[in-house]
Image (cartoon, rainbow, N blue to C red):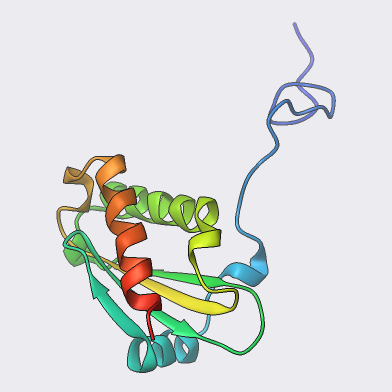
Length: 131
């Protein structure tokens, strides 16, 4: 019988691919923050999702995702959230230095290929980031 691995990667503390994730400070968490971005942020409609962007004076870029049951079953909602978090993380340079972003997932999000979602995300960021 083999001993259990030291960590989830299967090695003894050496992970060939470190986890890439948003820092805790990059998450929008409170309902008041979501409401403020939805009320005061600039909107960009993309079809599979709506993006709201609100500029702030200081602090990190933060992301909040709204995926109600109207957007589909939990598998589809969770995939949409993973895709949007990945786009936010990998394309941070496309965003203003200090802003809050709220993405609202629409039904049919999973019907779009990743490349098209990425293209629409970048276009929405550019549109919402204009003053």
